[in-house]
Image (cartoon, rainbow, N blue to C red; front, side, top):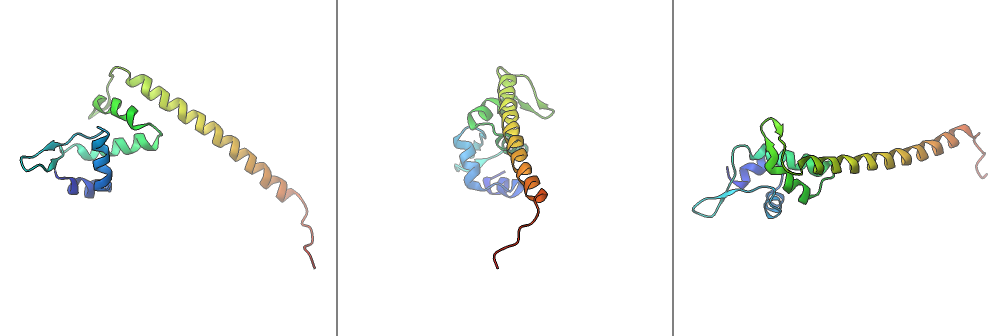
Length: 122
């Protein structure tokens, strides 16, 4: 499939698909006319790339993981477990930081609602 069709099927811009190619996350074949030709499973690969990016993985980490993908999910490759564990650790740290910030805001809301209303300026 050509890049335009892949873009339509995934909702990802052609510019971003070219960026994925530059980063070696997607590797299309080249037709004799020079057009990019993507495999039928390319939409699945694009979805996986988007999911990894949304999870906070770097393009470098994703580049290491992409060859490890198969139809049934992730198969073991050298360092795939370490890359995924690092990603989970970063997410856990972000969740902890967000939980702390949420608690701070919730405490502020509780403080506001527990205080009697003061009359405004007349």
